[in-house]
Amino acid sequence: MHQFDDRNITWYRLDWLKDVEFYVYKVDEENRIVDVLFRFAANTKAMLHRHKAPYITFVVQGELRFYRPNGELKEIRPTGSYVSGIANAEPHFEGGGDEDAIVFFSNRNVEDALYEFLDENMQPTVTLRFADFKAQLETQGMSKWQVKPAA
Image (cartoon, rainbow, N blue to C red; front, side):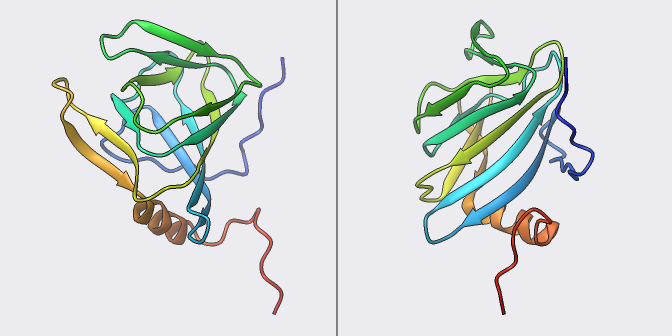
């Protein structure tokens, strides 16, 4: 089996979000789109959260596993899965299967919040917003994959 070659990606991590790394590809203010590649560590569950904007996922490597708030396995998306999700659906955990999962997320029609992280009482603890991803992209610098505008 072939694996996605991510040697040219500089992964970033948030101190409070274990087992998840990411790389922001694009933040489109005009169309309110945020494109991000996530890597979920194998056999883990990322912090309980809900998506606050509609999104599309494409599983590039491994399988993305979804768990209900009680920890019960809800769904497995294998490599090649392309799925559209809605804003404000059931909170869930996500994580990799037996190997790291690499998943492209395209968040669409983002008003402000993208992800709302919840505690064990389903109360919001951290919210990642459009401005957070814009700041991250600026920190990363212009992606080497993006075409620079002509002068």
